[in-house]
Image 1 (cartoon, rainbow, N blue to C red):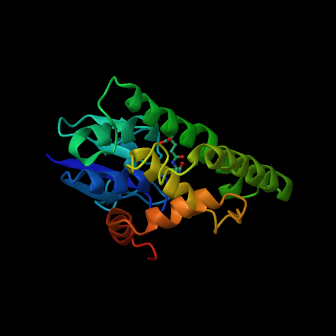
Image 2 (image 1 turned 135 degrees about the horizontal axis):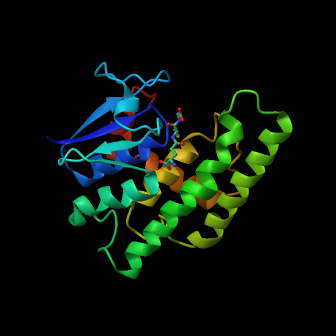
Length: 203
Ligand SMILES: N[C@@H](CCC(=O)N[C@@H](CS)C(=O)NCC(=O)O)C(=O)O
């Protein structure tokens, strides 16, 4: 059995989708809808009782969830792709540090922006919190094209995805030009273009 990625088009699972393509490993993408039905006609809750994407079914049949774990796992599938340094090195933990930051600080601060019924005050507070996290990233980038240097890592895939939501949730990236440049750079990667196409997203 090859790897299987369960995704919701354009959601955080897009980072795993991009990373699997970057890693060059064989996998099958399976869409999940808001009613928790899979494009294979199954019940997504039977794959993971968590109900949310992403979930990666491994060759053993075990299921791995949580982007902060999944992305380093995918990166480690093919060390030659350079998506994460060797496990146990400081470089490895730098990338996992960024994955954790992306998940708990950037991604989760979007919640009010996507939740039906959020008030304007809640949305404004969420935008300010996300922009404050992007400002931190801006302050660390220097001349680096990506978060940790020249290499596009799994953490950059996650950052690309949250940045791809910015227009939709009215987050203005003008004050973070290096972050906006990273987004523009990531957008042109073959993996990003292919994953978006596979998920039926606009180019
Ligand atoms: N802690 C999870 C959160 C994943 C998550 O928030 N997934 C969202 C999409 S970005 C989702 O599946 N939402 C649909 C739902 O919860 O029903 C992770 O980091 O992977």
